[in-house]
Figure 1 (cartoon, one colour):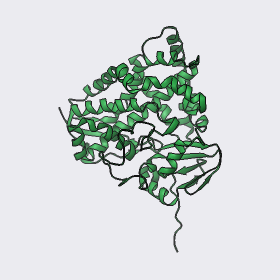
Figure 2 (spheres, helix red, strand yellow):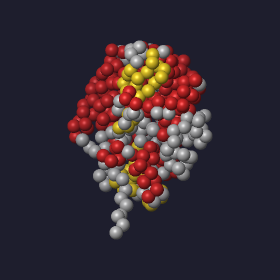
Figure 3 (cartoon, one colour):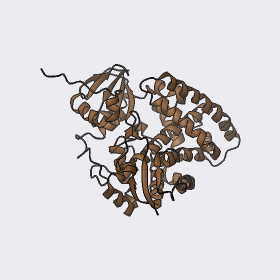
Figure 4 (cartoon, one colour):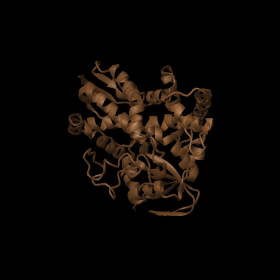
Length: 404
């Protein structure tokens, strides 16, 4: 008697241990599957996920229940003119040249300070000592807020990410996220009002002063964007640094190639975004019935787009389960734009506004780390274990190295 093949459960312990095997089964046998517990369709093929990110029929109305309770209403929920106006208000601060000139010294100082704390030790947990601290500290400093509040923001970041990744609906985690929202609002709103009265040259002042056709952001909208920046900007860079270093150490010949030619850092980052992306799933909600591989999704139903599966789809990428910083089918010139081949930053109108900030942080960070450490190897000799479902990376990255 032949057993009936069942779709993998994305909330199961087996999936959390090894999502990549489950992704292959989903792509091949269950490209469209209904997940009853989460009340969502799950899609996994590259073409379907790409369409969900680019086709205007797929809205982001799901963020009203997914993000708004902890962030407030953000740019991610907006569509049409409202979205284009708000994106135009915030985007100039994150463009390449202006970003590097204005905030480059802040980014470099934060990276250097963290690396200096362990460069002579010969060993480090890169997650705790660097990756999870660096982007949050940068965001606090870019906003022009006290450096003494770095740890406070790190705590808020951890709490909000717990809320967003709470796919199983743990009530204690949800309550902690809502408490954090209130604390963050109590902290930010008076500072936003103060910057309107006494603007400086920091990002918070820029957001408060930004205006297009007489429209500017309200105090609540500025606060919501700062909350979103804390998590979206922090989580992607945090986990990207961790995964990029782990991927390179696991492939010593590629690590050496990047060490010798630092211009390969963006290509290595792009390949990590494809091979082991920080964010593995993002949701969308179609405004009308849509046909995808495997069937029809009804209007108003939530669709969970499995980025981690789509980025390893053999229908799109050659040798998708191989990490290759010189991959020919991943265009480095587009890897940090809305035309990227990988799907880690979404695509289209909701492409990540902070992609170039993330790239600049990665370039600064990896250069500092490679300058400080030679003969980098995993402590104990074994690669670290990835953890997480919504976002994913090694929870610890214990490295041994020879100080430069």
